[in-house]
Image (cartoon, rainbow, N blue to C red):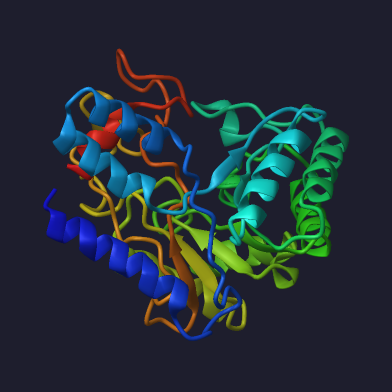
Length: 316
């Protein structure tokens, strides 16, 4: 990647942080973790003489990327509190993904989550307490609503759990975006809007789309506008972390699911709140670039594990 492109990405991020207020996230400067896996990897490669690779990795390390919260109840608060402390010391806002709903990911590659509804309620309150009054940005439960719509929720009260989570996190000072999947998950905007409404989206800052997926931004925005219309004008954010080349063709790639570590993908739009779309509060990097989606093909790391070679391919 050329130095010119690196500079352009940095300028895009700066422009997003300094844009005039146009959204619920107005002038929210998100925390950039100087000790992220990408930052650590860049330093290691620089020391080893891999200067070109280190430069590419620094493009990833320069962006505010969400910290995913997946630890069990009783273990999550210290992680949240430390990130909050570091973000505030830097004069920035911490950015989290709450990902612990019971029967998460339908038990697939990212399976896990709380052991029961009561456990999840306790976990959400643990997270909220560690926010220490906010502010914070939280993307709530990727794919949980879409899975419920398509029959994978396996919880009679999932909507109530999500509505409770929104209320608790909002009360703790967080701006919450309830996840709504992507344009290919639930293709009927009215159907996903109805599910979002049952899950309390009216109390949230809005909804999120394309988390950890690869749909092109124009397609996601068009879908989001349709969902927004069905909700009476709700705002939304879009994960652009890995959609630079769009989604792969077909349902499988190299013997694995097309949604899981597909080859040939690239970084997308750098995070910014200057979207040019009144309903789109921000383009964000919600998925941590370089972490595996799962062991979808031989030799691929488990979900959530840092995979520097994949990060390098995305940035190359």
